[in-house]
Length: 336
Image (cartoon, rainbow, N blue to C red):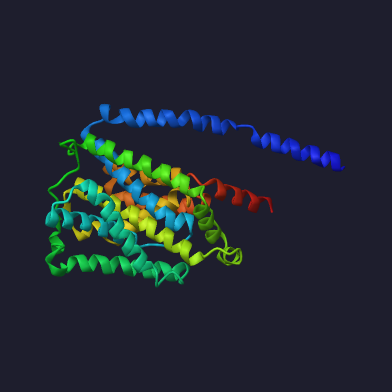
């Protein structure tokens, strides 16, 4: 019996080590997706290129929120606040000091990251709905502060006009196709970094905290530190994305960062699948590209979205493209 059990275990390991058909499909599919993304703006009109640009911007925002919600399991419904901080930091410093947007890209991320650290530090002991409500309040505090035009910097309800653009060897990035390649290049870099981060020690710590915070503490993980790192990093990426958004939109105003923006970002993460990077990309397409396809049914778009979210929660709570960890947990639960 022991030999039989050993043989079965070895056969199982052999089967698990063999590449699955799904892995072959993914290896073949990724180059095809990259080629399609590169050639897409060569055949599409400016309108759809602009749609793809904003899709890419919301992919970056979704990835930043996915660190907080998907990886470590913190409910954050005020993420647009850090997006706003990054956008306004870019606009103000560009107007006051004339700094290059390439320099403002990390500076805005740093400003939003510091704000995320300062705002998150006193509230991380909260959990679930309580944390959700507090982050909604933080979003409104930032938005109202921008409306009140402190020290005459934010322009109040009218906002700020951004005149500078990204430049490469003197060439200004202004056309939709230029922004397309810039945004999706940033998406590719961010995805590469986050995939590496998921496989690192801090990525595993985040998942332990998400699954069982008490057990993670018992294992010696500093859960408060892990949460702060996630919140700071997510806020920083959202702030850096604000620089690209400011350059693209030109006019930055508080109405672009209201509570509904945070709801959209939260829906992107939930719709795509918590902790899933491909899920965030797919969820962003559902929230940004699908409305353009349904523009002829503008009166019913919110009805479609509400119905889609309800059906998702009932029939596919793990999301459109769940992470492997979620899939494993759900299968184990079904087996029991």
